[in-house]
Length: 302
Image (cartoon, rainbow, N blue to C red; front, side):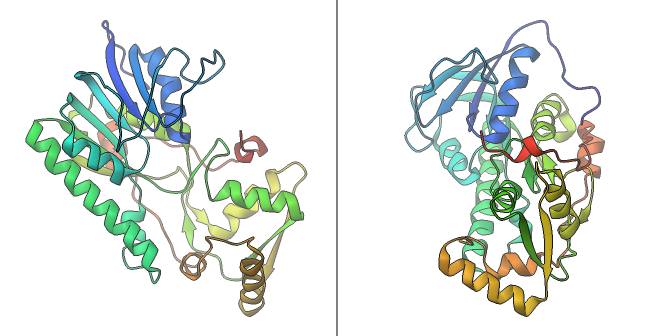
């Protein structure tokens, strides 16, 4: 979590948010209004007024980055909480005046750059290109851009990693892992990412830079999954299999469609340390993420 929290101002500021209906965007919207921001958010689908929804009072516009609605000519800040490559295409062509831009990317720009999986290499290349385009365009416009690269995101049941594991474990009562899944991970809560986006806004040291924003604890892949399984109601059992047996079980699961998207490269990474230094973010905008202390509600889809 972040010390110092939000910088309050005496005048309202205007924000434009892309990806506000996503997991990080929802957490950000819930924090913008109390921090004296007027918010316009873009969603692919029309959103009905919901007084209980995070970010109540947001002005929602319907559209996409490649086909946006009519947007304000000027805002104080733009936040991108969705796909970085789509945002880079929009920003490169947009004429909106915004002195401050904060965009979420991913540490995949580094971890998947040399993957054996061509789809993962393509993702890393698209992220790298998007970052380059954004920094070049922001410099041309005299805008201050910060890119935040989260690690493994969790917290509101909308991620494709730990929530998926939890869903399968609830169904089976157990979850299999190959032996040797000891690679280190730093799961990061969506609330800490939302606070990071706000905390870096008025910190000039963060302008024109990209930061890793990992979680507050490094733990093995096995321990991370074990904590998820232990917090479920009821708890599920972790089943460690010898790698040849796990490979057979994975093959069967892929045939049945239960392991779609879980490639060999992802399995190999379970033995690799994917850790990032939070020091620059701590130094420049007092980033202080929480340790990994999961509870069941964090992995239930809304």
